[in-house]
Amino acid sequence: MTTTLTSTSTTAETPQPLRIAVPNKGSLSEPAAQLLREAGYATRREGRELVLADPENGAEFFFLRPRDIAVYVGSGTLDVGITGRDLLLDSRAEADEVMQLGFGASTFRFAGPAAAVSSGLDVAGLDGQRVATSYAGLVADHLAAAGVSASVVRLDGAVETAVQLGVADAIADVVETGSTLRSAGLAVFGEPILRSEAVVITRRGADGPVRPAGLDVLLRRIQGVLVARQYVMVDYDVPREHLDDACALTPGLESPTVAPLADPAWAAVRAMVPKARTNKVMDDLYDLGARAILVTTIHACRL
Ligand SMILES: Nc1ncnc2c1ncn2[C@@H]1O[C@H](COP(=O)(O)OP(=O)(O)OP(=O)(O)O)[C@@H](O)[C@H]1O
Ligand SMILES: O=P(O)(O)OC[C@H]1O[C@H](OP(=O)(O)OP(=O)(O)O)[C@H](O)[C@@H]1O
Ligand SMILES: [Mg+2]
Image (cartoon, rainbow, N blue to C red; front, top):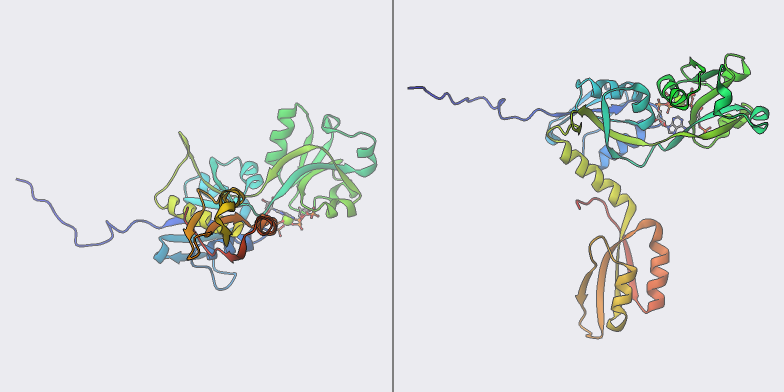
């Protein structure tokens, strides 16, 4: 007869925290920290902490260079990462996007001397030329796909200066407003190589990105913040004869809440409205005869 041993230790039952890589510096660092804070996670008190345990929320945060995050996640060392799509592709790590975060938006583009660009410099014209970039993997892959044989000069930053200093004939870099390019006498050419934004990534499995335990909770929390940022709650009273038209203006996510008022000729309506459309919707509701139109902020949600 076999005896079953019951463990008195809790370690066997305690789930491992989800290990999340977060940018420690650069453009993505502050918006990522803000997002996680709004999603209810612990945030580091001062900028030098490298690891932050958050047992309450089953998470452990590792603050890493954004460029390295896909490497840690792709190798399975960490479970989840927040990084830029451009950095993910540049790393060639075995990791995939599971959610787009809507911040850190940029385009990644070729640029060359403004005079050469206005004389018709195009991507095919890079054949036999030197292209400076901090994203050597991304650029090499793109040039190979375009059948262009150029040498890629890998620099750490301030890539725009490379042409002026004669290290390269053209560059490929992140362009946000374009002012850095202009002040270096450069102009973009060709189609954008990539449109990037901050993304959540996990390791690539046999059937797409793996979904470690705890990932769904993290994504739901983040999505709750993103939706709360994009929508407002609108309440108003409307004469019943205009109720259908009013509901068409404010369909909400599934369907608006309609409640009776003490006056049977009126109804009260509550619906989520995209923040960017708030004032237009209020104007249209008012024109329909709606009154007491109130707009409130949504702090968090689970859809
Ligand atoms: N204006 C911008 N300059 C650089 N990267 C940007 C910009 N806007 C968004 N990003 C995104 O931020 C990520 C790069 O972050 P990273 O921290 O490596 O560079 P950085 O913000 O230039 O910081 P630093 O150069 O100070 O280290 C990329 O995903 C990039 O697309
Ligand atoms: O289109 P813009 O709004 O001008 O922004 C793009 C510039 O910003 C980043 O440089 P960063 O300041 O990070 O310096 P770096 O090149 O040394 O990383 C990027 O590498 C571009 O140079
Ligand atoms: Mg930079």
